[in-house]
Image (cartoon, rainbow, N blue to C red; front, side):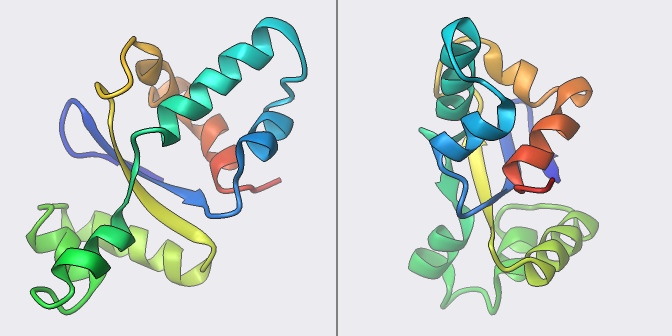
Length: 130
């Protein structure tokens, strides 16, 4: 699941156990161009991404009673999206909510990763679902 707050800020869920090696394995990238492209995709997703739960627990836990309230009141995420994220995280405790500024890495590959056409495929990899 993902939420595009605006043109550049995207929130997405990923399994906390997803390493670069696991990501590449699940993508099927072993050598050559595919390997270098998928390494770059992993970097786009995680090199500048921020763990939203860590931000909440480090800076906003006294101001907001829960992560859900932080997302709704501070981030201005719609209630249905907050409910969907928190329900998924409660059901699957290994998931982390990430925020990434799509312009932070450079290039336009992030538009490919977060496009409607391809995101469903990447989401299965990010959540480590078979």
